[in-house]
Amino acid sequence: MRGGPDRRVHGRRLTMFIRGTRVQTPPDKLEAAIANFKQQVLPAARSAPGNLGATLLVDRQSGAGIGITYWESAKALAASEQMGIKTRTDAAKNVSGTQIVNVERSEVVIMERAATPKAGTFIRVNTLNADPDKVDALTVFVRNKVLPVLKPQKGFRSAVMAVDRQTGRSSVATTWDTLADLKESESKISGLRQDAARAGGVTSPDGVEVEIFDVAVIEVAQAVAAPSSR
Image (cartoon, rainbow, N blue to C red; front, side):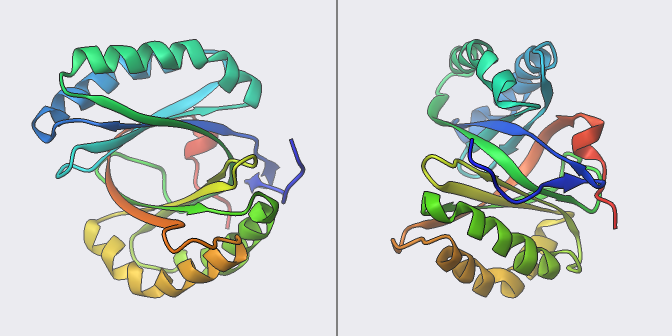
């Protein structure tokens, strides 16, 4: 793994990896999908060595969702792949109409928390198809230019950046107390989003995607949940 900028929480170096499974569920089956995540995915994740938690993001109108599991190392992530395959397969069986869209694995390079995570909050996921050689430059830009703008905003709860160093695909997820807070923050950061795209070497007009989700389920370890030191 290539070296990158120092990542710290409470002054300690943080190493964490995530697996994100994108799913599409009929909107009228969404509550069943949430229940399945609580009853099947969470227990399976808890029992896996090196797991640091899991969360489920949903778009209640479209039925789109992302199930995310957190891992203390790349080795723990790799060792959990069979568990991931089983829970994905079971979800498709247990909730009729559910389709697995894709599965992505990435390294967390920034985690900034103003408040402990909880269900019922709202998250904006910005995905950039960056140049792999510019992932570190993009990380520095987000840390030095984006975070200082985000942190004072009303309702800001957290920012997490994750990257795939092989493909350059990167995501910056910001969490907010209310949907109104999320929407109000957009005017402050829309310009920065384009600047970030340039820093990351994004060349395609469709190289930046923005999605909004509800945090339906979240259960994470204290090391992941604790607010960052000020």
